Image (cartoon, rainbow, N blue to C red; front, side, top):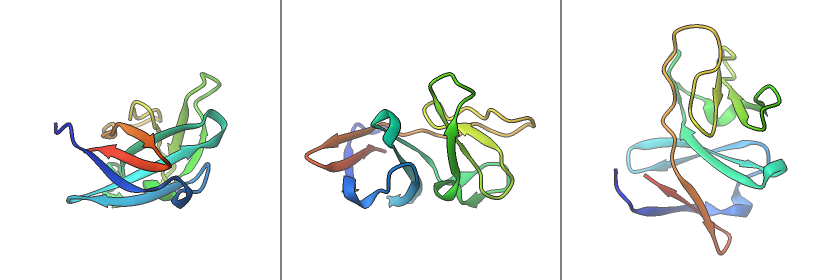
Length: 112
């Protein structure tokens, strides 16, 4: 894994509590600004259930009261923890790849 931090946009480019998609190198990445926790997360945009680039359009929600957040695939409602990438629904579906995020001077950076 590279240690390179790549700027992907300004914080104002990402709507709170929704996902946005960026392309870095050859990868589509879903970026989430979780307003309630003032935290940022990034996971692969590809849903491993049926290989579609849709997770940035997924629905964010609480991980059953444990303080974490999940995204539900908008097509088949498979749920993934956006911090760990873990698949948290029933069924045999791969976990997601996650990416470190940092914010500096209102710029969002991903480590890819």
